[in-house]
Image 1: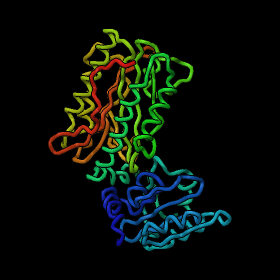
Image 2: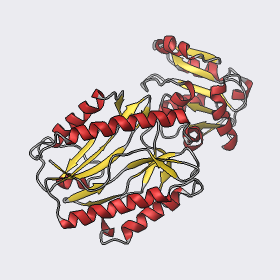
Image 3: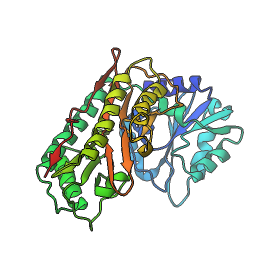
Image 4: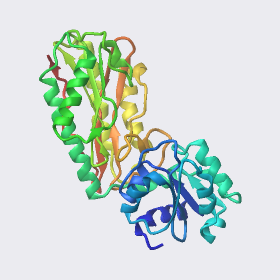
Length: 369
């Protein structure tokens, strides 16, 4: 294999006992070639054998862009009027290593049915399997350059949050606050949004994936939850902070402090050699041993990078060992449905000595507005 960009995929295939893999536009595609493409109705695939050169199936209208990437393997382009199946058949016959492939891995969480069926016709002797975890393992440990991009996305996000808080007042709607936060992120250099920001007040804050409302005005005493992130250089921040507007009851203060203690325990538990299970177990025990145990809803966190949710999943039962360079969220939460939700989310990178918390925005309870 002369294109060294594909070497991590070849290594992953050996670990997963795969003869070949196919990837479509998305995070793995971007990680390998340094550029992503729109996922649309036209199939666009990179196909690589474990040993040998990769091939590509490329819609003709993307050829000018694809040709700038220095891809050295064979390229089979196709036009709308002719359809894509001839390109698949040509790719299936291109290399002896591909024709002989018996175990063919695909991204099970991304590949669409029509692409899967076309691969099956082009490689009739192969068993196509979901190898999403194996393929995505090439992104598990971040390089120093990737960490730098994540830090920049986080810096933009945190500065935007502080600027937004200075403008929040009781009487605003959630969508008004969402618009301010979005504007502040782009003003500070965001190249995109990691996801649509979650701005949730009062009872809406108890919905972990709430949507901002146009018809609710923020009231004194409301919890106001921000879950958001900027994207920079392809990498995503993911931060959650919860505030109280004007005032906070002693009950809600205790509710908040319990989540804060769980967040701190999760970051203390994060170190190379621990498991994802270990981190989540320690976080959940803080919540379970509190007076608010009935209000737990979710695991501790998820991997973060080119995707907002990727491996590793920080949850009980996942005994994967944490390794230096892995990045994930620590985001315990408690949710009293219809009343109040609190989540405190940080982004951390595993280091030899423990972990570095990439997010720096203060966590102590704060009253705003």
